[in-house]
Length: 176
Image 1 (cartoon, rainbow, N blue to C red):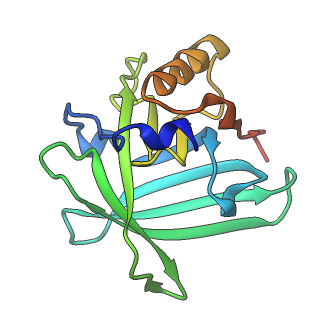
Image 2 (image 1 turned 120 degrees about the vertical axis):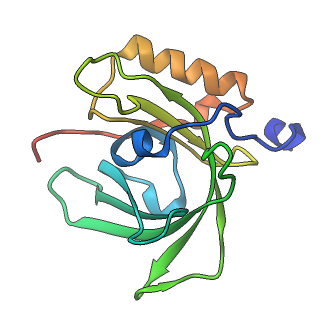
């Protein structure tokens, strides 16, 4: 049996985040991917507030499968802020042919880092987890992060109980 199955469910970050600083474009640097994402290159996830809805988030995930410049895959999801006191726990459902699938997957923000730039007040990196630790996404506002900082993030998720051998870097090559 898997060692992560003995751990209590992963919890979202307790410290609240400012949603407006989180929304926008994120490059997926590494992941423990879902079956749909295996072999993804240039993966980018974008979050925007759903029009007229304070707690609804539109999620757009775009990537090339298998090779750079290959056909793009776009996956759309609808997100809901599950814990509005912190904004760090959401639920997401895929959109298929414009309809929301009646399954709401947990979306747990376990970490964000502040921008090191005076030019932006957006969060610079984030890590999204799953309660049983079967999935993970390490994302950045830029397509690349320094290797030593990446290793620090991997150490953080290791401390959260993730099997870091399952983490795969997502190739990024820009401009495409």
